[in-house]
Length: 82
Image (cartoon, rainbow, N blue to C red; front, top):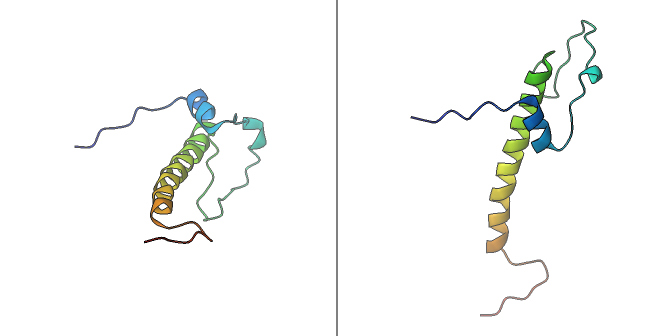
């Protein structure tokens, strides 16, 4: 059975993201907002931050996997001996 990750507070997510989320940047003017992939943007500050944090973690995990492929391939312009 998979373990549930502990819920992070807004402050903890902001600290890991490296910036603070300002609720006034998202006025509650009644207009629906959408991400570029057409998912609706939540009006809840915590939910928006959670989505940004999850996207950040996913990018970081992919970034770690990309560097392992660099070890297998030679650098551009470096001659191979052997």
